[in-house]
Structure formats: C-alpha cells, structure tokens
Image 1 (tube, rainbow, N blue to C red):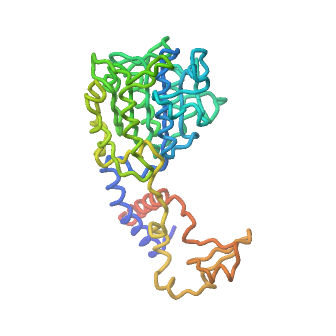
Image 2: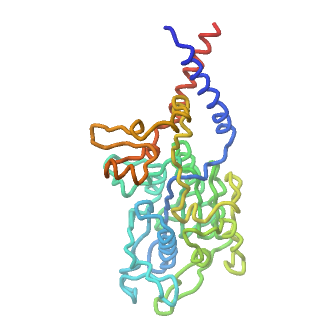
Image 3: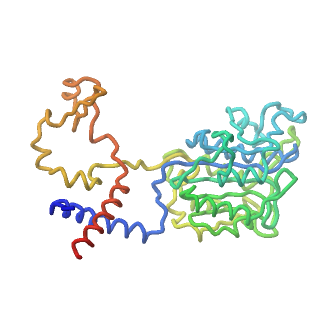
Length: 388
C-alpha cells in the first residue's frame, strides 16, 4: 500500500504534538480540579427518638449542600426517618437543630433515598461500589464517574474503627477503605471528602489507602464526641458539637465563596468541639488551603469545553489565511435538517439565514484524545515501515 508523503508528514506532526501532552499527563498524579459533577452521600446510622440529634446532624448537612447548589438527584440521603412523626415529637412533622427552632429541617421537600430498615451496611457498601441488581432504581444509585467529587458525611454511634448501624450491625474502617478502593479501581470518583461525627471518629479513616481522599473526624482514639445543646420542649439533644460548628462555618459560604477547606479545618478548636478533631491529608494530592469549600459542598465547577484550537486535524487542514479571506457564502453549509451552519455568527448573518443558524465554532468537537491516540499508533506503524 502506497502512502503519500503529505499523509506521513501529517501523522508525524500529530504524533509529535501528542507525545509531550501524554508524557505530562502520565507524570502528573494530581487529580484534575476541573471536575464536572459533585455528589453527596449523607448517612445517619442510628435510630430511635433519643438519637434525635443524629437525624438533625444529617439533615443539617443536607440543607447546606442543597443551598450551595447540589441537586437532589445528586444527593443520597440515608436515615432512619423515625423522628419527625414520632409520637413524642411536640412539633409533628418537624425536625430542628437549634432550640430557637428557626429552621425546620424536615420542611423543605426533602428526598430520603434509604429509610428505616434500608439503612444497612450492605446497602451502604453497594451504594458506594454500585453493585445492584438490574431492577434497582436509578434515583437510589450513586451514578458517579472519574470526574466526580464526592462528599461523604456519616454520623451515629461508634468506637475504635467501627460505626454502628441501626443498633444492629457495624461497619469497620477496613470495610469503608476497601469500598473506596473498589471505587478507585472502577473510576467512580475524582476526589472524596470523608467527614464523620461519632465517638473515636478519627479511627475510621486510619485504614484508607486509595488516592485522592481527604478525611476529617470529630474525635481521637479513646475520645468521645459530644452534643451541643438540648431543647427543653423537645426533651433531647438536637445537634452534635462537631456538626454544629461545621454548620456555623458553612452559613458564611455562598456559591462564589473563596473560603477553603483549610479555613474550615482551622475553625475546629478544642474549646468549641470539646474533643480533638482530626484531618488526614497524606492521600490527597492537593493542598487543602487551595481547595475551595464549594469543590465538595457546592456545585461549582470550571467549564471544560472542546476548542477548535485543540483539534490538530483541524489545524492541519485549515490555514488561517484561508479563513480570513473566505466570504460568508463559503462559510455556510445547509444540512438535510434545514439547519444552516455558519462560522463566526453575527447579527447580520442571523438576519440573512433566519433562526435555524448554528455557530460551527460553538458546536462540540469529537473526543480529540481518542483521535490522537489512533493517529499516534498509525504514526508509529508508518515510522517502523519507513525505517525498515
């Protein structure tokens, strides 16, 4: 098979352009901060009326991430849901996290994905690893990918390297660590921020070994976590100290906030929490002082668009001089769907062609990386042929 000299030159150019980019990508282990979607998994593992504060904890975090932009479709909420309509609740259908009862946490159209007996260790592990049967509802699945940042919050009763579920079973630090590793192997996350509020909470993240995970907890080994205050009329504690001060900090955050995770960690003091909050950063590739709170608590990401300038095939086949001298007629095409595609759309062009005009420069390109890899492979084959 004869190959033209110009084709060989084009393939060589593509290969040369691509090689440095691939080398840079392989050498850098940092996760791409330009993630495309955020998810939250919020879990209260306890039940019964006297654990009112745990449901208030998780509903408080639920309210925060929704306020900052994460939609219900990307929030998985697991809780016993046995408090709002409990016969002992003086305020039926409501849950509060403060004795002033200014905010009804249960009154803002909450969507509980797993409630009551559905809150189990098995379902939690299945949720993280996405190991479900074919009939499991999509709305109850964690549909993340390699570009997803996931905020995981857990609260309940725990001890050294374990957390109780529904006062019937336990999940260990190793269980969560292995689930995270499966997520990493299946490319189900970009970064994970794990937060836990329970007794001896910091022991729950000691076994993590997967990359790009940042973790924090409310108390050290052999140290209890404490409630913040009680409501006399409700009759029980309404929120834990660690979560209370997380909320106090998060109330200062808006979607365009420049506050970072390090600002949050610096906010934790023994005087406030009455225990030693911990943070683990050795698995995380970014400096927490440069990670915005909204990278996990909100739904703010950088837009990543395909540009023509990134398309080597386009650059090789279109000379800038030809584009500058081309007229409007040569820049338009009409397809079978009666849509006119025009380069460099302006008001006069729209007046000329009507509403069915698409700016070619604004239409997304194909997956350039796939094309580059194919080109590089072909280039290598041709090089071997020539050298022989």
